Length: 128
Image 1 (cartoon, rainbow, N blue to C red):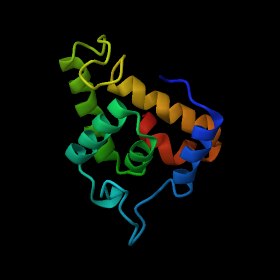
Image 2: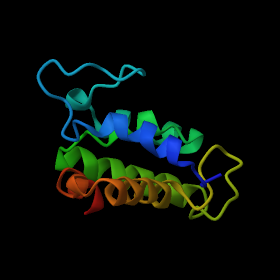
Image 3: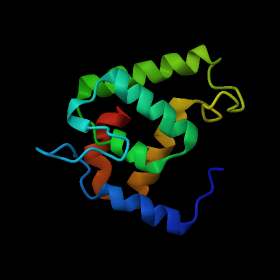
Image 4: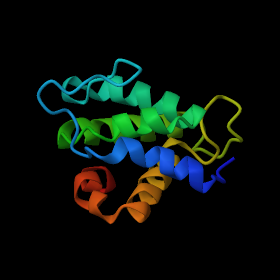
């Protein structure tokens, strides 16, 4: 399920033009998510859903959040969810990606940075 075509990769790049996101009056994503007003709770919910369903648009919307405290809280929440699910060793039957939420998130970030090196700095807050 992790194999993707070049066409899908190109479609993902469309959302990467504003890696900082959340500019004054930045539009909400299709899900109504606004990076500027995100909390760890809303971001955790969005990422859990996006990672479980493999939705790159939602993942990219979530990654526009660059507030260190919100990101750190979100990653801690995702780690707690992975731990509660048995360390991510399941097969994804509960809607979580096989291997866990945090590894799936890091995989998505690495793929984005590999395609577009200018995203290293904006996504650095997520990599820490």
